[in-house]
Length: 98
Image 1 (tube, rainbow, N blue to C red):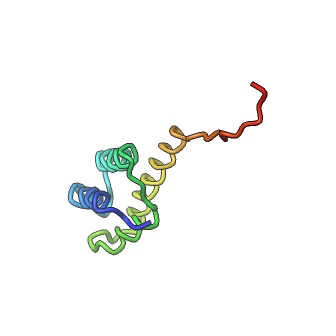
Image 2 (tube, rainbow, N blue to C red):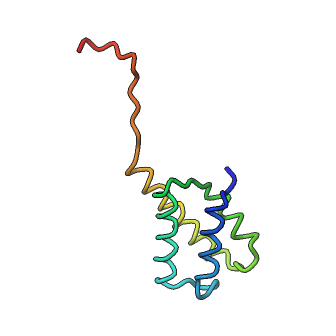
Image 3 (spheres, helix red, strand yellow):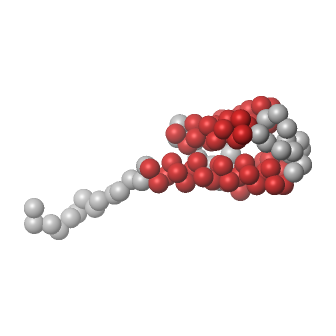
């Protein structure tokens, strides 16, 4: 699934807001977590591999371990949201006697 313009803008927000791309601080981590949380809570969907590719191609992110840390946060926020908001579908053609 390709990244939407809204998600790309949020990734750019991460890029411009992080103080050091070689070693992200706890404040940076909190900001990144909140950005991914707001994306999924706002109905945005992303493929973590697409985000990883974006960061790798963006140019200013040189340290693979920092990119991996961001990917972990993105994946965690997405999984956490999906776990809390599972939809359960029930068939309309229930053969129940009730």
